[in-house]
Length: 421
Image 1 (tube, one colour):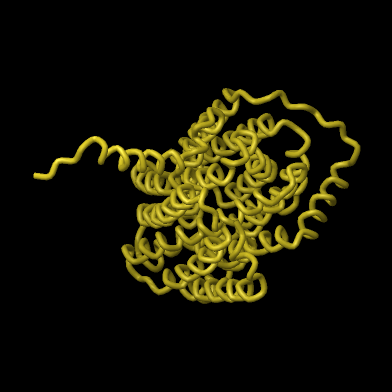
Image 2 (cartoon, rainbow, N blue to C red):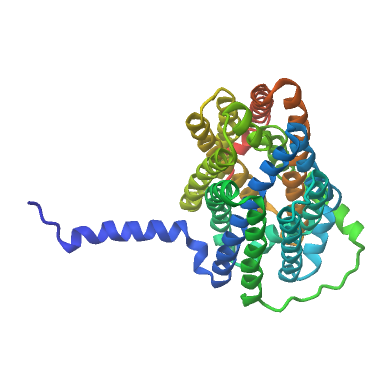
């Protein structure tokens, strides 16, 4: 029997401790810990509602096109107002703005729960509430993106962004599975109720934070002038411009699979709400793995290299998903897809926040948020409509090929991306 001395085991324990400290470095900040815990609870609820809502829409309409309409409705307000949301995020207390938007989202979830409990819910109700949620997101997303730097030191920013991704995707693992089981056992109304309650966690967390008093900066320019200034700054900067176009191609094409998952569960896999929940959770598990990997490796740099890897892995697994016909294989494909998507979007976000000037942070991140919130519904609209005519599998094939083509384009025309840190 070989015995190991304390001196031999200490380096191993020390290395393990350092690994976990690096992976969760941003959690050393009390304010960020509050944000992380509150967001985790809230986003679990959000995913429960998103999963249940998609299945409810398909139950009511049996239409993939209508899934696209609901997704598109949620994206209209961000398309119109998110840039102004970025201006507001640069003008007012971001904490106060987030309390208002989160409270609004809670109210909308309660309305949907009541309509579903009473049996009065109609597809047009869901479209209208999706519009309201999109309106809240138009102001919430830029503020939340820019708020991170108020919670951590600048050197912890890449780790904090990665951990934001991990909490969102940990919620994606938990939320859809719980939603599928809850929907099958008790109905969608309870999913919407749980989501409404979950917003309390993030609102309380925001109110508990100890932040410097917000200093009102004298306004010498109108909101419209500041908006134009932010857009001009972003698109005149070659690197920022490229980092905006990359995720745009992802959400317009590769991300269309998300719209079709409820139909995939029923029409391709011949499953039900539980199957839909498992598919969503598999995607979330892959994303969580990607986020934790990024958090652990953040201090080593190489973000541009990982961005490039994600740029190809993400649509490649969409193509693989298109060829699966069993729940197990679809879940495996979604794990790879989730990993690739997390690496792709997270690296784009990290590089943007690293290279943007602080005075433009809210406005630049509003453009990024506009791409994410506005681009996904546009992709949902065309993909849902196309799937109505050629089916979900062939729609995924078309989406993946277009996204891979853009990946090749950026590989050839922007080789500097691979060298970014």
